[in-house]
Length: 146
Image (cartoon, rainbow, N blue to C red; front, side, top):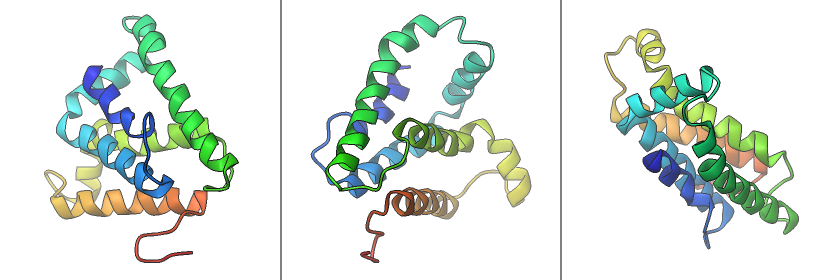
């Protein structure tokens, strides 16, 4: 839980512009999934099972951080720094996309015909998700200002 919460911290206390902060957030979440796939899978199984073992800890520790991340996104939207979308569901979509690299690694390996994702695959994954988020929020894309 501690390591996973650290991966969420990129949006909690940031002085970075939205595009850089979101890049750091996505990198941290993908790094966690790639470096700690079993932790991510255990967490996923806990959620699938109804959060019976860690529900109280999740409410006490994750929910406040999630609310801060949502406030950060909403502050950017209110300041005109990002296009308006539902911040909660944007975070959920980022979680789903990044955690898939741990939770569904076997499926990805089968589909890609690989025993594991290589650095190049990880780079493509990061860049693709960053592009999706940047375009959704109408943020400048790396090398392609709007």
